[in-house]
Image (tube, rainbow, N blue to C red):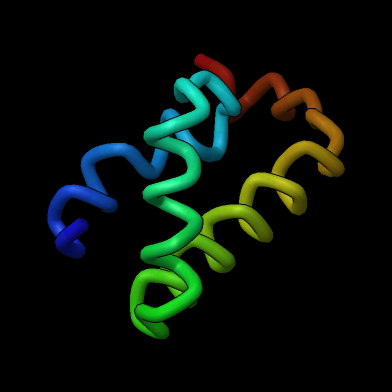
Amino acid sequence: MKCAEFLQELTNYLDGVLDDRTKAELEDHLACCHNCYVVCDTHKKTIEIDRGTELYELPADLSN
């Protein structure tokens, strides 16, 4: 698998919607490609941080 192919499937990988064969290919690529590992790990951590944040209501003077 090439990096471009990995990046095309990254969202599906993180969403857990890949078939077993494609998931295994992506994980094999992650095991040997440091750059894609960093990209994947950064995206994963960003999602985790975003899920943990609270929504705040905007002040009335900013919401118009």
